[in-house]
Length: 331
Image 1 (cartoon, rainbow, N blue to C red):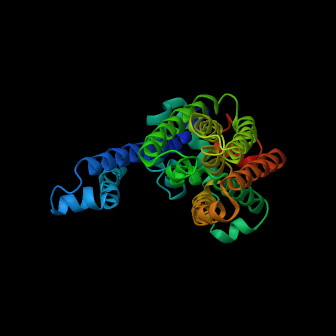
Image 2 (image 1 turned 30 degrees about the horizontal axis):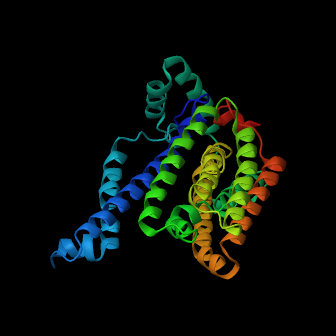
Image 3 (image 1 turned 90 degrees about the horizontal axis):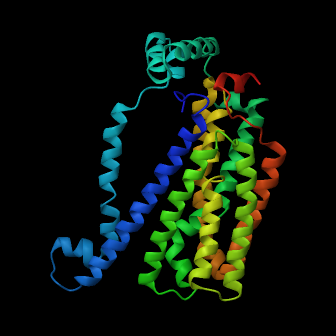
């Protein structure tokens, strides 16, 4: 993100969310194929391979995750360093070289001069984020990040087959439908890539969060009225559509843009921690809410949090499209 041109930065940051959705889809497809393999080869032999991928197929589902993890570690070797961090560390030549390679000589040198001026500000730790105006920015990023998770997205992502089974869909079909949901989640993310730098962050976020609330309410109604099959699937897909171009990717875009360089690393660490803690809370409470209050009420609760996200963003979220990080920090 620190190396991205201002006019394309939003879309490029959304590629991070796209990568997440691709990973989720690949995991769904892998799980479906492994489950079908296990079903077709049940009881064939007692080898370790059979134990991993037939008798205890869930172990095999975890094991195949080693492949993308290894690829990720290898690809990290070719990722360029942040020019803003390099400038702040006194490595000006490396910073300028990266900016010129990405933006071209003229734009690269112009951005480097602005970065160099901002780099004179000393690096700050968490204590800097507890003072105004950074405290207000941190609160904005943390709340939007938490509310994104409280929309219940990972209730759908992690408990999708169970959710579909509760609507009367058999296990084998539920895994297949989950692949369809994963594919929809990935495709819908392209809307954010396409429009985030033309429509802007604020309009996309407000539209998506409000419509996601409606889609979740409709999903709750489907469960309340015992509507299963494609009717339920369409409602969940509508939620994924609106989440995929707003609540999902824009929390990353906003969090990476609004903080000045000297505290950005610390602030993003706090936001990522907020995301995972919120994710943990949702994953912990989803089955509790489902069993205690019912699946319909659970989705109504998620719809409520989407409404909270809409009104909070409407009151606090400001537009950053088309501005350099230095211009955002000055404003």
